[in-house]
Amino acid sequence: MLFRSDDQGVIAISQPAHAWISGQLLRAWNEALPEPLLLAAEQHDIAWLDWEVEPTFDAKAGRPHLFRDIGAALHAPMWMRGVDRALEAWGNHVALLVSRHGGVIYRRFTTRHRLDEADATAAARYLEIQAKREAEWASALSLGAADLERHSAWIAFVDTLSLAVCGELKTPLEFDAPDGKGGYRTLTVSEDPDRPFQFTVSPWPFRVSELIVEGQGRRLPEGGRFADEAAFRRWQATAERSSFHARLKA
Picture 1 (cartoon, helix red, strand yellow):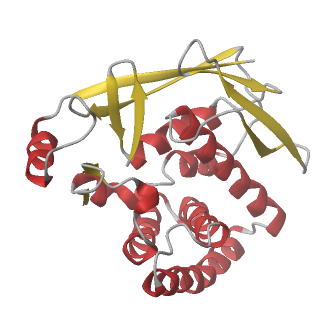
Picture 2 (picture 1 turned 60 degrees about the vertical axis):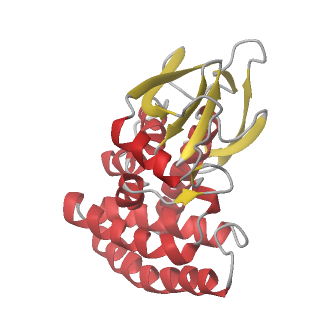
């Protein structure tokens, strides 16, 4: 779960909702991309579905745990179950890309999500087990290393861009994204200081002149926190959904 602040307070956004925005971003890309890649980008956080139904509570923050504050001992097994769900739902191509995105997380962030030895062990176990499965699926699909690296880079890019759009990362930021020619290009993303959640992206990578992405979350109570976990659970059972959107332009 992550949190977006606006002039009305704070909206809690689930990981799958954030992933949906990743999918919206990639589906607007100015390049024909394979459907398994588009679906994997949209569903890359399928591992969090069960947790988001019953999220753990951060008593210090007075709200559900931010996804960054949960260790791999908890979510690495979730990731493996998520890959299994992707395999059963859509087949080995989408499962392969979802699995590789988990690997990106556990390789790239050596301190985040590894709060103690149990977290490091869980991350290493994920990488070991999934590497064998990924190799088998890639071989069956005749997908080479270069294609896999590029597809993983697309998912990692829109994942990070979605985090910025959802308010979790502060701009300006620079991102490396595949350029469609076998290489990479650096994109700069900035939020308009006078118009919250309106972003400029340069160079412009989408096939439309302006892109609006949208989703739904749940608005936290005034002050953005709960007195205790019981209050949070009552809110969780009754809170209405709140729509949000962000605009991206050249």
